[in-house]
Image (cartoon, rainbow, N blue to C red; front, side, top):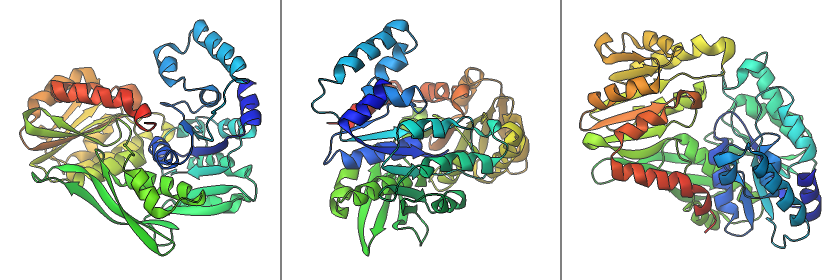
Length: 420
């Protein structure tokens, strides 16, 4: 395999990231920190399987892959360039930051056997994680994720989320040196003093917090995205940098260039002087809970949640949607539910939200005009759902044209912004 040959010849250090929440944010944060000193390449988009990981090792093909990666000509180009690249890449990346995904049992082991990491990161599993439908239960999924650590050696490192008990338990399943991150007082890279940053008009602009490590701390301010998940991503990047010998001040400076991924609790201006929290990339019980808790702490005239189905939950689906509906009923004044499963969400929100302020639609296309009609000045609107629900269509119609163009540029340029 060409990708295996590249790893053997160029000997890059591999940083592998897995988990059910926060993989992509952690990947961007790690790259932002390391690029201040090293040559770094990260997986673009969602290239986290047995095709995507080798593709990233061979080159930066993410744009081509998503615009036509299934074609014969695309793969012919990859093989041709990959073969000749074995002899001609004089500045191959020193570090590869890769996501290792797991939809089914055995997925992680397939990747780690061929591409063993030097640093492995497990972000979070959660009580009812996404992609659980092909596993017997959540413990089975956690066991699969832990296989990333099984092949690590004594001189390798495992970075674990101290806030997730299932992740923290994985420290007993590896020979590697353990480092922990999180809000927990026991975390080695500890997050404290977390706040939402507000501008002079009392509108949220991002988050601020401190990173505490080895008796010292640095302040960190992240712009454009919300949620404790961004702080956890930054802590992951910081811990990776610390393992590799970067000092905390330089890490803090490097994190100024970290931008939360598009569709992950991003702050956008909406029509009628509204504010949108765009969390449309994907959804799981853990990430939906985080999004609603984030909405809870935002100043707003009214809080509106537009929630689409959470897919791939198997037997946990009804329970998960009902739990999210109950939480939404405690936080929101208006709830718009999209999809067949989200009927459970709306049912559970009754009582917290009056019937006349709860709406159900089959698709995002059906809902978008009603969402636009409901918005009032001063509203904050959370939009979230699984990828298959196409919740970005809701965002597209409620942001103004200049903001729409700006966000499109963010989505297109996010990868190279980390490399300039």
